[in-house]
Length: 125
Image (cartoon, rainbow, N blue to C red; front, side, top):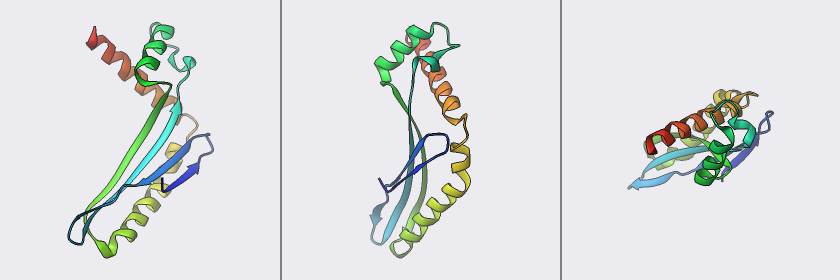
């Protein structure tokens, strides 16, 4: 983990540097953002049979969902990789943290993941 930031809405943003050398002096510069969120039974209200859906979800995925975002720059000169990574991190903090820090971000993301899971369940049946 490169860095963490605690947001006002109670979420913890984790920043990871997954940069790697490609060939010669060229690099893939990569920034991964993760926001783990715990799901509770209450998150399933309004979805058919919430108790059953919650149990199936937890069996399949556990009680955590994770928002992820990747930012990459490819074929970067080795001398520029640290500066490029710093710019990616700075821009993401400047433009995305307010979105991720919104009080309804967690609720909306979990709702999306639950809906996707519910749709997959109908495909499996």
